[in-house]
Length: 478
Image (cartoon, rainbow, N blue to C red; front, side, top):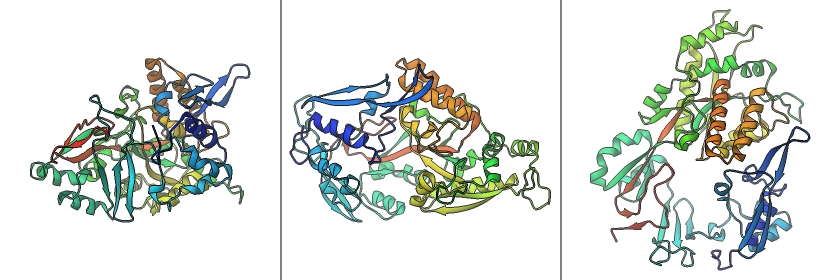
């Protein structure tokens, strides 16, 4: 196996990736949380963190020694490996974070995969070419991949993407719910098939900022004390969960091609999904009852409730620009809040700013946002463990702020170390139950995975996770 520039790929690249990049405190690696192992120190009774050691024994053998058992180890080892011969000098001089950035010619970015980057034309196309030195062969001894080229056409909008597909300029199109009714009767005429692959792994939800910290520059709390008290009230969050009209979202936003979401783990993850968690049906009367029981009522007749101290219950609600789904879901949620006497100032924010608010400035109150998911629940530990940066409602907690967060922390760690599949499933099921009881994330719906593909390919194998192994795909019309 070689890198695209012909340099041999060796175990030393793997050792370099883990020890010099993933475990480098000066490099913000997204893989860091996955390979940071937590365990309970029996001597002290405290949670401890440790890394694995990664050693290249020779050019073709890597030894990994883990501090604890780790069930998703093999799946996690799908992480990207970096070319030591190119990047080590930049790690040495502290410029790794700048070497391959958004301005880099993509052809300079090499890997070991079946395709190399032949050409990139901004705002037009990205052309991938077959790697003639790819290591894998089929059962007959033929070198893979079969395809000679893959052309990614860059378009300015989703409307243009659909138009180019209908015109025959592209062979694959991710179908939006609103496009399905238009495309479905055109399958025979357009010589394509729409593959429906069930609920997505990702999710869209409403969450409230429950961060107890202070801005280190101003020493002001991230969230005003009055609003923090509302957001941290479990009964308040449950009341809000009852105003999410999932049927309206599926009908009006996803055009009937969606699924109500109750649990944090998707049915697409198989038996890890717990279908029996607490549900919050759309019920305005129940939401009103809960708020009334808190003593949060409209005392001045303006249609907006006040809390027991007389504070008007109003806050800002944000979601990202350039996401029609998030915007329309946000509007439905805003309308539901108004029905129960809560005022939400709904605004659209650039995605980059939204990410900054979530992960650095913590300057937000309520947010509609989505996250992708994966087939193994451990991939969500950076969201569900209270010490992690993506624990959205209150990240980087020095200690779990609540008993239920502490229990989820423990469950996720124990599940990652449990090698008995049925026991792992039980631990994740319990974590989903706790999350549903405490609703830090108020879920909406999951979309249907829809993809239109021309009927000119062989070796397509639609599954929960994809349409094909690109290495074995070939055309039948050439």
